[in-house]
Image 1 (cartoon, rainbow, N blue to C red):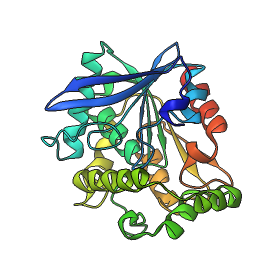
Image 2 (cartoon, helix red, strand yellow):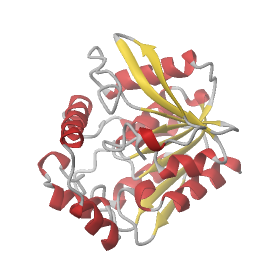
Image 3 (cartoon, rainbow, N blue to C red):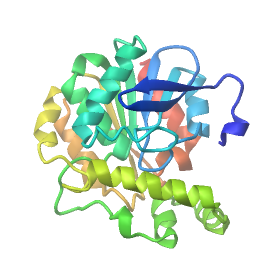
Image 4 (cartoon, helix red, strand yellow):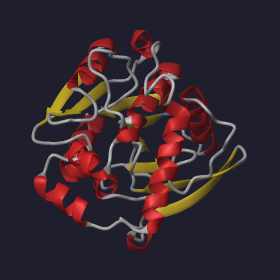
Length: 264
């Protein structure tokens, strides 16, 4: 959803942090729920956010270097981003949140829950990267053309056809390049993983739900299975007939799956 189409209830904020400021959307009432976006999806309040905000106080920031957030060049690693988000929670006066992360944001959410388990009440990971699984590597987003990427993100042929038919604007192309540059800054080497993370996941104390897409062509199912096995008492849920962009392809269904788990 573009900024011009935001419902009046959605607050778009700038939060001063480090050497600049970040963009943050917030709407809804209830328990604070921090959503950490994937490599794409920054800079927008999407239908998924809107559905979820009907049941929770949703905070959707853009990572530094993504979307409308400043680069904050002093941050260069995922570990830096963990401290960045702990600082954000402190600035907003949030001692504990429900934490939802998608893909790259799922990795970041897992690292945050490992580092400071007391700050996370419930944890939901949507098709997360972050683990080193040599026998099932994550697809290389940096070499994929739009004709390859879109069918990898979405399973629904109608969504795929619509996305491929839409001519991107110059601004959208430039934003995509900027987002990929930020992704490379935080996740290039080692490629979208932390070799130490899997053995540290035992530190996660929050009830956890891992949601995998049955037709994920970006992150093989084994990654979700390994997360579910390593996090104590984690639950693995598989969404049928859905691609990697889970909350983009099935926004209402995913919001319900997240909200139900948070409410339990």
